[in-house]
Length: 524
Image (cartoon, rainbow, N blue to C red):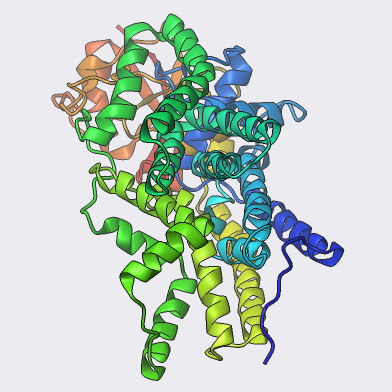
């Protein structure tokens, strides 16, 4: 019976295979021709748009007065990749995620492939063919870039630990420090905490001197925090206490469940279901194979013997287990939970799955040929789904056509908006309008009163007498005595409105039809 044999050092043929799979991550960016249809992607892209427009690469503030909720590494990359084209596009906005996925596949191939039967290529293929990883590599969100930095740091710290030569050990520590700095500049201190927590526990379990290990960890933490600290200082110089409050709330308030607003609050079992769904279709294979293996008899294993074997004879497997447990435990503590938070687990879970799959092949549960066919089938489905079906659906749902119709009427200049909910913005429409929308509601970022009802009494008045404003149809239909409606504000400031455009369908980030109003002074 044939079994998978992956040499520790990849052959030329396998290098071509590795290159194929990593380039596949970029080729999947045919999804970049899909229009934005959810508010998450344009919300990140608009930060880069503002960077290019204002030339403020430290703490850009949009036209409505809000600053970005996350550190700027992801937005820096979008802006840099957009410089040749002169503007941010769907392609340049999604390219950092695809490049990060490609690099993570290369890291995993080399890291896991140089040890223990060369399982790196299989690990990378299994990881790439999971739904959560593949999806996250094709969207304009910070999560894949964060995952690449975190896993790169975790792998570099392991390499440094087992390096015999001082020069190699120093080199790996420098790589780990830069990776953790990049992670912290992508989403905050979590990018430093997770890698250092994993390596500290690993060294402690292996019997290293606790004091020496702790001092080394503290030194690595300080070195990794230097570059992020420089940005935080520069951002504080621009944003002041408002920026500081935002940074504290996003990094510590979210973890401690003390945010001023609810954000992705999920029950404790959410992370388990996220992994089962995120690992589709391989989670189905594992469940099915466990049932088949149980019928033929599971191998007997003494827990103490297994633990000692893992700890002393299989350090990579033990380190992977530590990383999985650290990341899962960390993200199980806060109320705020999302499936993408668990992405740093996926390379190490893919390694465990590669070990398990090879064991299944040796036991005759599945064959090498069957596994290859499954991988090809999954990739074909993903490419078809994400590269053809998804762009078709997304372009149909996108607000690009609505933005084009509004542009034809308004031509240029700011377009003001009124939606009495600071979390509801016309992100998609605004991206395709070139970030021209200015909210008339005052910015209430990091404000304990942001949950209170807002109404038109809070609306500012534009400094011009003739302007365009977009709103949802429900606010225009309200009587002039209702402060939540536009008519109340028009009467209060002696203005009149003419309907210039009504969208044929709902806006996908507001879920209401867009009404474009032409506002002029009312006749006395």
